Length: 543
Image (cartoon, rainbow, N blue to C red):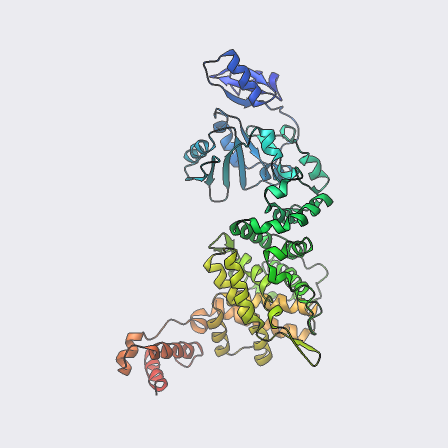
């Protein structure tokens, strides 16, 4: 008899233990079925198999799981899909992060699955017996159960993440749910599996905020209290784990609401203390909100701008507003899409960097506030803020690439305002060159942030003429960057340092660098376009 034999239907809803092709034990759990098999045939090793009732609500499970089912059913211990993948299947969404638990030999199973799929495997935790398989769009983690399956599920964070499904199963009715996660999904609640779940791992407090927004679940009063109580314990958590949760929250669908909730529950004070200090810090018109509220509004507008530019935005209620007039930027959709979705060292994307910069762009205002004749000012807040942002991001172990990029955005986020005031919607080639010379790739993000900052400042476009000028300026800057880069932003050099030494008969030194920078700007502004003109230019520049 085999798993495919129709006579197995007699055992629907139970586990059977096979020895070879014969059933040697039956039980309501894998353990009880194998215990029976051990009593019946003590010298032989069995393997468990869950016999599913072939009816009910079919779950939205990844196709990859279907490919692996026959293979996993040959493992000598029962394999269960657990956590978020089960939750998402109930919600009709196939997950790309598949977590499995097994009673023993999890790392060994990891490498067997990797061999089966023809991809590498990794040991995540030798002592706890956890391994990982990484495919192009899916990650599979295999871990040894913490105690029994029931123990393992009850030790997890939230009830909706504490469900399991035998790896061979397809239907809703086969879900193992000791903590009531299914009822909480129906009731749209996020609650703990047990009262000590957060103190056991304080980072779960951050996860509560993120998942309540991602899953559209309301935190219970008990959970909110637990999060607030647990907040001070975050100091004990590894910076890498705090970084990971902050990154996920910022890259999620509602970063503005996430930051507001972090602050409401006392978590922002621990995670980004300089940001929390901005609460209630007043600003002069045209600002209409204190600094922290303004920052949250910037994030909210930025998410909307991203989606509008990339063609998947909702303009409901804004059809007649100038924000709908982003057609110039929409022409750059492919370029912007590539920029925002590019991977960044440390597991972020370009979109994540931009949103983190938006979150931190005014962090220097707390240190630079002055008031004169009733007007509040924050002179050099962008310079001070860039250093403050970089320092905190390093503490949270963000990558060097991420820190430097965000630092450039924060430091330069006021430049579009200065440019539009000085030159209007049509910046000179020199202004374009100098803007990107200072901001580099971050200049793209500075442009998008400037739009969101304006909208948050004025609670919408404000004066239409000013908005149109800013839109024209940012569109021109981005067009130069993406479509005229080799002529206006970073033209290929006409001369090398060695060429200058020969042409000018000078020694190597700082003067060479100065002349090359001047020459590059002259190329970008159209003053120089040939090698001969370049030589004549540097001779004149050298005096």
